[in-house]
Length: 162
Length: 162
Image: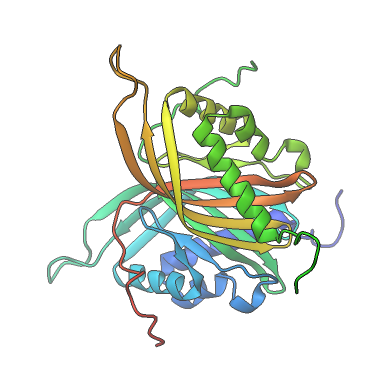
């Protein structure tokens, strides 16, 4: 189980790296990096477009709509930090599914001159991210993020077999 | 391009049939049918669990949590109808991604004796559904649904190349 050479990254480890890189690129406001983490049109084998749902938004479909939305969000976000929790990664063939909780702290541009930043806002969001394996690594096919509006007691309940 | 025999359904057509069957089973309150449309644990090639996000909820992971949530929702829903619009289907290998708008009309149990139904409520929800190809047809791997909270003008904007 152990070897002298560096251990090869598992699929799940590679997917987690890509998922982390996506959120880090958003934190840096690095549009080119975000753009590079989404599937290119030429990387599809079949007729399949990328899709993206921001919290509370309708579905955006295709690179044009999706990347424009990130440009818009970045223009209106002075500061954003993601604290990821509950990261679950599943891999089946050339597709990976990641679910995670995005604990977001963000601030917009300063509302008044002389201030550095708008007020910081905390948000509890859950995301489902679908990745495809490509020759250049795992790339996003779909991102769906949504606000958690209600408390659930599922984590507290016993797994009582019925 | 045409033949005497019945035309074979394309992958996308099969996926749309499975997606429609999922919402019809929810409308009927048919727990067994809903359960049968989700991947079984034995149908995974790799370590990948099903996941589900209902509008405003946290992530539910695994058949136990996911199916319990449907039993709970069905127990509290007297009437539910889904009008699907904007259905986009993409297929890559053995995975399919469906996005759609769920225009939901639902009613809970009657709050007072003698009434047939609680008040009907309309909801605008968007969903991303991920299906896997199995020997028994396309089965749900992930369902993520979220409320549309803000209006977007993306459908009105011109696709101006920049």
